[in-house]
Image 1 (tube, rainbow, N blue to C red):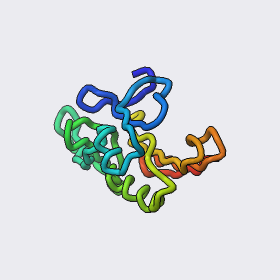
Image 2: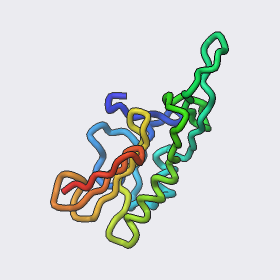
Image 3: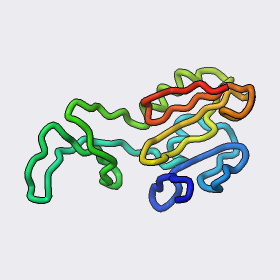
Length: 147
């Protein structure tokens, strides 16, 4: 995909509200999304599991595990044995706590480069382009507040 957006069931794994993104991909929602709506519309309603890693000769790879999507069984990456995955729903639950109240709603959510992300807007502009405050969660690894 030109915007490096992942696919789920052969459709772009992204949702948005408001103006169509530059890449013209994704599912458009006519209203600000709840977490459940964003997850479903963006095709993020799956979990990931850790699986033992083996070579082609069926040798066990110590101290490493494969991160595997539960729905497609696609291997998303390899991590150390101490890694604990954070599920998409957990990321959105975290965003819901930040977005409690009517001032913040989801305007974009999707999977980019195998990492789920969600973005919420404070209603004063789009993230990073105006005086509004936007919040972006990328794989729940970091949170950036944009002005």
